[in-house]
Image (cartoon, rainbow, N blue to C red; front, side, top):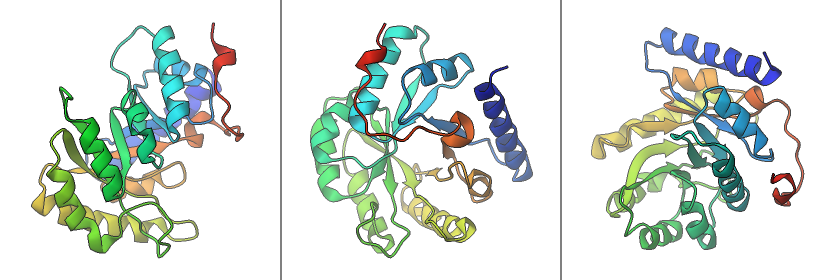
Length: 238
C-alpha cells in the first residue's frame, strides 16, 4: 500500500472514530490538492476519493480539464475553497460544483449574473471572518444574517451553510464553538443551510466535535506540499 493510501486510511479512521463518538453522520472529506499536479487527484480517485478542493481558479480549472481527459469514471466534484475574485467567476463556474468562499456582496452580484441559466443551483457557503482583521476574507458576524438573506434571494444559488477557518494561535475549540452557534442562528431562518465547512489537517477532529459536515484536509492526507508559484501544468500532459 502506498504512503498516500496509508495516510488516507488513517485519516478516514480518525474521522469515523470522531463521528461515532459524537453519534453523528460522518462529514464529507474534501482532499485539498492545490500545488499538486493532476496525478495526485487521479491517484486519490483510484482510492475512492470523489471530492477535491482547490484554492486558485486557474490552477483548479486546468487540473479539472486534465483530470477529465484521464479519468473516465463519474461522480467527481471540485470545490473552490479559496478566495474568489469577481473577474474569475466565469472560469470558476466551469469546474467548481461548490463555492466555499462567498464573502461579499460584489461577488454575490457577479454569481447572480452567471447562474441564471443553470439547470441545477450552485452550492455556496458563506465564509465568516472569525478574526478582528478586516482584511481577512469573510463576512463579519454582525452582517451574517443580512447577507444570508441576500444569498437566499438569488435564483440559481443554494445556500448550503457556513465556512470558516480557525485563526492561527487561537484554540480552535473556541472558534469552532462560535461558528457552530452562528450556524444554528442562520439555520433558524434558513433551514436548508445545514452544512458547516470547518476543519483542516490540524483540527479536523475538533471540528467534528462541533458539527462539521465538510472537512477540507490537505497535508495530513497528501503529505508535505511543494509550495511554489503556480505556473500551469501543461508539461505533464500525455
